Image 1 (spheres, each protein chain N blue to C red):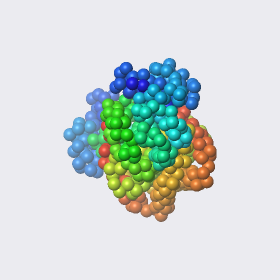
Image 2: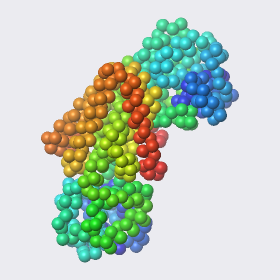
Image 3: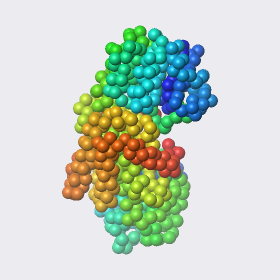
Image 4: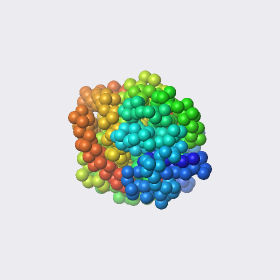
Amino acid sequence: MNVFIIGIGLIGGSYARDIRQIRPGCRIFGIDADPEHLQQALSMDLIDEAATYGDLVKADLVLVSIPVDALVRELPVILDSIGEQTLVLDAGSTKNLVCKAVEDHDNRRNFLACHPIAGTEFSGPSAAISGLYQGKTNIICEVEKTAFKLQERALDLFRDLGMRIRYMNPDAHDKHIAYVSHLSHISSFMLGKTVIEKEKNERDIFDMAGSGFESTVRLAKSSPAMWTPIFRQNKEYVLEILNEYIANLEGFKAQMLADDFDGIYREMDNTNKIREILDGIPLNKVK
Amino acid sequence: MNVFIIGIGLIGGSYARDIRQIRPGCRIFGIDADPEHLQQALSMDLIDEAATYGDLVKADLVLVSIPVDALVRELPVILDSIGEQTLVLDAGSTKNLVCKAVEDHDNRRNFLACHPIAGTEFSGPSAAISGLYQGKTNIICEVEKTAFKLQERALDLFRDLGMRIRYMNPDAHDKHIAYVSHLSHISSFMLGKTVIEKEKNERDIFDMAGSGFESTVRLAKSSPAMWTPIFRQNKEYVLEILNEYIANLEGFKAQMLADDFDGIYREMDNTNKIREILDGIPLNKVK
C-alpha cells in the first residue's frame, strides 16, 4: 500500500505515525513545500522517501494536510495527478471553499472531504504524535460525492485509527466550527495580546500566571500560517460569532459598571452548564 | 500543633491534605458555614473535628479560605478570637480590600496576607487534592506588618509545601492578577455563554468541540460564589483590562472586515511570543 502525505506537519506526521502501525508493510511517501520539514520527516522515519506530484499516480491513499489556502489551490492539481483507484483525503479546518474548489473536477469521486477534530497548538514534523486521532471525531462532508469503494477504504482507515465519524454538509461544518474552534483561537490570541501589551515586565506574568491563564491562552501559540487562511475562508461565520462574543463581553462590562453583581452571578451560574457539555467531549477522557 | 481551616473547599481542603503529611501529629479543625461541607470534610478525613470561632484561641495556625466578600467581613472577627501566638493566613484572590479590612486591627501582626496561585475550576471539599501547592507561587502582601516570628512560621510552612514566594504590595497584586487571572475567567465565561446561546443543539458542541475549545472554556466551570465577589472587589482593574481586551477584539474584527489578513498574520505572529512566557510558568512543567 502506497501512502502519500502532502504536508508533513503535526496532522500529516501524526497520520504517518499511526498508519505505519495499523497498515504494516505500507510505504509512506512525503511531499512538502518546505525542504527542511521533508528532511526532518525522513530523519524521524515519519516517511520512507520524499516524492513529487509526478509519483501520485501510484498512490493508494493521499492525505493532504496543508494550510487551507494552499489546500484550495493544490487540491485540483493533486486530483489531476492521481491514479484511477487513488483515495484523496484532506484535513482542512474549513469545508465550504475546499469542496467548492473541486466540485466540478473529473476526479471528484476520488476525494473525501474530512476534518479530523484533533491537534495541538504546535506545528511541524516534530509536533507529530502517535495516537493523536484515537477517540476523536472526524467530520466528513459531501460523502455522497465520493466513490462508494473509496468511502469504504476511508472508513476502514478511520475505524482502525479509533475515530468517530460524523457527516455534515460543508456549510453547517463551517458555521459550527466557527463557534467551537475558530472563536476560541481569536479569544486566546487577543487575550495573549492584551496581557503582553499591559505587562511590560514579563516577570510579572511569569510569576503570577497560573493554570487558568495558561489554559485560556494556550491557543495563542498556534501557527499564524495555518490560522490566517482559516479566518479568511470562514470570514462570514467567524465575524458573526465574534460579534456575539464582543456583545457578551460588553454586556458583562455594563453589568460591572452598573454594580449588577447579582446579574453577573446569574450569568456565570447559567454558563456553568458548560460543565455537562464538556463532560461529553470524548477528548476530555483521553487526555 | 493545632491547625484550623476556615472554609474547607478546594483551597482549604488541599492545604489540609498536605499539612497532614508535612506536619505529622498536627490536629486539624474545620470551620465552615455549610454544615454539609463540614460533614463531608470529616468523612473524608480532611479534618479531625468540627470547631467554632470559640476554639480559635488554641490555634497555632489558621487558614482562611473563603470567598473574598466573606473574607473581608470575617477576618476582623477571626483576629478578635485568636490566641497571642496564632498565625492567620488567607488565600484571597484580591488583596487591597482584604488588607484594608484589618489595617487597624489590634492583632494585625498575627495576620499574613497571602494569595497562593493555585487551584482548579472545581470547588468544595471533594475538589481538594494533594500536592496542589507544589511548585506554585504564593504572593505575600505587606509582609512587614506581620510579626517576624510568625512570618518565619509561615515561610517554613510554604517551603515545606514546595511553594515559591513573591512579595508585592496589595495594589500591584490586584492590578497584575486582573491581567493574568481575572480577565481569563471573564473571557472563558463569555466564550461559554456565546457558544451555548448559539448552539441550541448541544450535540453539535459535543461532537465538534476539541481540546482547543475545552481549554479556552474550562474556567467557565468555576464557582460564581467565589468569582462574583472577586470581580466586585477588583472592579477598577478588571474593567481596565476588560476594556483593553474588547478593544483588541474590535481591532481584530476591523482587520477581518477590511480583509487585512496580513495584519492578522502579524498580530498572531507577535502574540506567539506568549510561548516563551508560558514556558516560564512552573505549573507548566508540573502538570
